[in-house]
Amino acid sequence: MPGFEIFGKEEKKEIADVLDTGVLFRYEFNEQRKGVFKVREFEEQFSQYCGCRFSQAVTSGTAALKVALTALGVGPGDEVITQGFTFVATWEAILEVGAIPVFTEIDTTLNMDPADLEKKITSKTKCIIPVHMLGAAANIQQIVVIANKHNICVLEDTAQAAGCRIQGQHLGTFGDCGTFSFDSVKTMTTGEGGMIITDNEDLWRSMSEYQDHGHDHKVNPGARGGEGRRFIGFNYRMMELQGAIGIAQLAKLDFMVAEQQKNKSKLKEVTTGIPGVKFREILDENGDSATFFAFTLENAEHCKRVNDCLKNEGQGAINFSENSWHFFPKWEHLLEGKTLTSSGYPFAEPGGRKRIVYDPQALPASSDLLARTLIYPVSIIMNEDKINAMRKALTLASKV
Ligand SMILES: Cc1ncc(COP(=O)(O)O)c(C=O)c1O
Image (cartoon, rainbow, N blue to C red; front, side, top):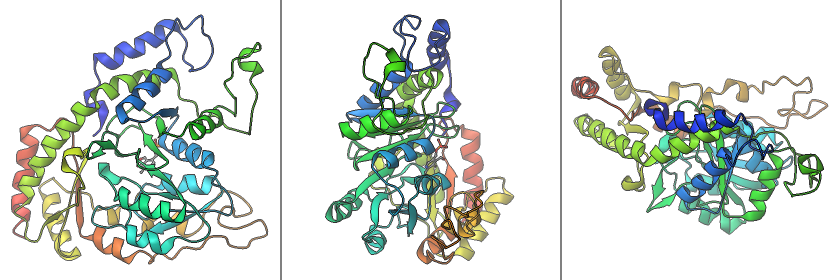
């Protein structure tokens, strides 16, 4: 990570195609655009790459989550279960559609713990969002079995795991739909941007209409101004320049993943000497997108000593239990119910009655696991000097 490491002539050529027509928008201007439909082409190629029937491009991974939840019919009165280790966007989208986020523990995949998921399902659970954090798969097959048993839909938040597969099957295709982010730090990037994939045509049609103000996209004599609407929508349209970059980056995705896999295995090799080290559970090493490398030590004290040593050598790792973006006890604005609305919504109902109250201690197993886990991002380009510096630091760290 990320894809901008290898921006090159391919991205520039795709962008030039768009600038040559002057049509920066995905809909309309059919004569002027001379057959150039970059967002549409990006969607078609993304479906082909993932092995699914439909892709819907949108403005961001956060928008993708909101559009997908809306199309799945999730709203006020519903609960949506996700994991306590994710980026804030996952639960922002749940709150945004008026539903209530419920958080599970993570397991050794560092993703949703299926056993805890089962305990948290209630009659109000409308959707389950497992997140494939840090480029590696959640126990998605088990999660889908549980969801099917309870007749609940599954939305896979695949924002961080484009190109990742289990036995050849792409993440994002196991549930009812999967969402992706192409923001600045993702394995493939369009600067900002997102995608939703699904095999369900009705679901795709709802997403396609919702992200464009509800327009039905039916050919009619009034052109776009004559389109009808089945429901209210919003604007989350991706623009042509993003589609153009997406086409070029998608063509490089398998190469990026292969390079990351090579670099990750070098990091793994230099880490094996740390006493008690265990590597993150990867369900299918061959399909791993390898955007991050994570290892766990026996206790938090040892983990801290190791990371202090790595930091002294200029090679500090990320400990996500200290990170305020990705872990439940650190989301002070969620825990304290901070919002700009005068009514206190979505944390309180109009009139002041609390709808949502969280206990910061609610996920002890995740807190324990993340406090003793260290994580390195894996680059596409990692030169020998960098690997050698990490080797030296990790060798020293194996003695503390
Ligand atoms: C797990 C997860 N979901 C959703 C998103 C949101 O993506 P975006 O930044 O494109 O809105 C991110 C972004 O980092 C993410 O990591």
